Image 1 (tube, one colour):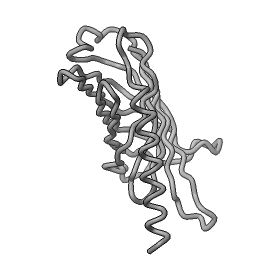
Image 2: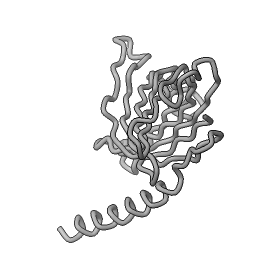
Image 3: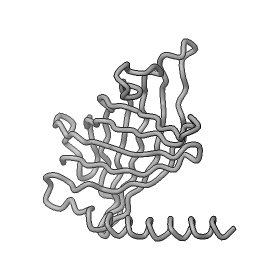
Image 4: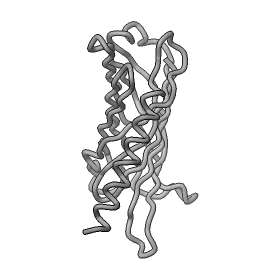
Length: 180
């Protein structure tokens, strides 16, 4: 019981420290490169694999980032090859979709959405061979937007998302950076 309380207290302190850092990294005023945002959330769906087992679709993550001036909600669904890529780098991400919804002090600010262009999933194991963590790194491309992002349909707005998911809880945390 004492160990559990100690671990919980440590996680709370770590979370507060990370949220404080995230609050200072959320300013997108004036356009340009948006600083890296810290996102926390959960893996809501591990995806559905074809009967052949080679391709899996819809591995989905729902995440939030709370800043001093805005709040961001990021949803990412990836498709990946369910076979190792041969170089020890895990599984290759073959596509997917994403959306970023931003609320500022005045309410809804805008939505940016697009496609996952590529990336990788790496599974990490403990000494007994049990999978304990999944690391995801994907490249994002915008295909459209609403609100502050309206009219950016034809623009190349790249982004990178990197996260780690604790298995089996699905708790996910990571960073995302976009060039608006």
